[in-house]
Image: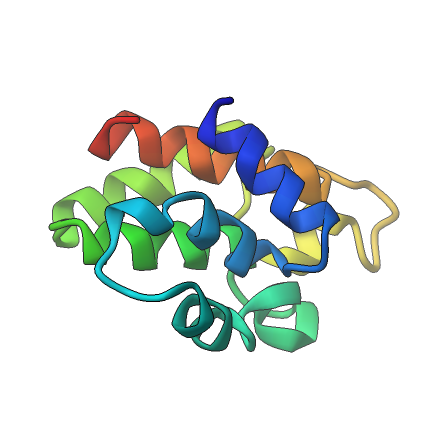
Length: 123
């Protein structure tokens, strides 16, 4: 099973978007699943307010950092995600809150964050 599919499965089974992406890469990080769940708890729904960065992208950035990423690779992750997710990284915009024009579903955000991360760190 691809990591993106694993992440979506975690999302459908009680994890928020951030936790779901991180859990799909648990084997790549030196951190327990319980710690992942705690660390990612407040990053879902654009840090809980829909106003901030997508939780999926936040989770991918944390995995990137835990696997040796740097500022350059973090920028590439944001650019890759933005290009696939309709031009935004902000939860409110992605969900179409206030505009009625959804750019990207939560499942697709989780998928795109995971796939962009795979492109940077490998599967």
